Length: 236
Image (cartoon, helix red, strand yellow):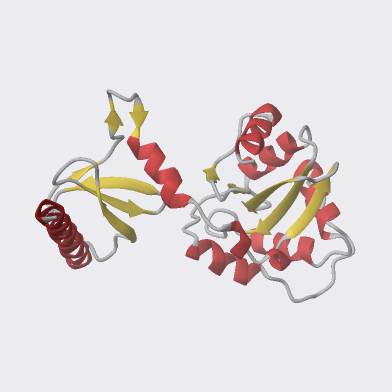
């Protein structure tokens, strides 16, 4: 009994110390690097080294944030990229919390699988994604219009035109595949600003950003329809 109690007390002491170290590091980062968008600080698998989660990536630092390490932490014995695994874990979301009324919905086939996409209509990578989606069946796609106006000045205007058209799903597909804007758009209340706020909350700083139905985040464009199929299958 005494051994169990001693072990428990030691565990609590270690946890308390680690928690205090993280809090101290968070304060050091705020003080010394006020412009660094820190989303979280965590103890890494390496003693004395901490993970700093910022803008969808991880950098490593020591207790006083004097040194930063940029790159991948690899477990050689298990042949695992620990950094990639942690980014995937930290980037996951609860897709049930997404406001689907703010998204364009289109269904291919039975639509039994689901994917959520934050997309900019004038982003060439987003256009490539839609081209790849042509070869994917049995999926429901929710597109959150997410214009990055710093890169594409007209993207917000185009997004509003698409949303306010008679058939937003058809208008979206036609614009992304054929670069044709809808001619029947009228002034309406669009969710674009809400989507921008949502994307910022979810730390989305590039398009396209995809979420699978298990909450897994993917940044960038899957190479082809086959890879999209593999991703959809992995999220079941």
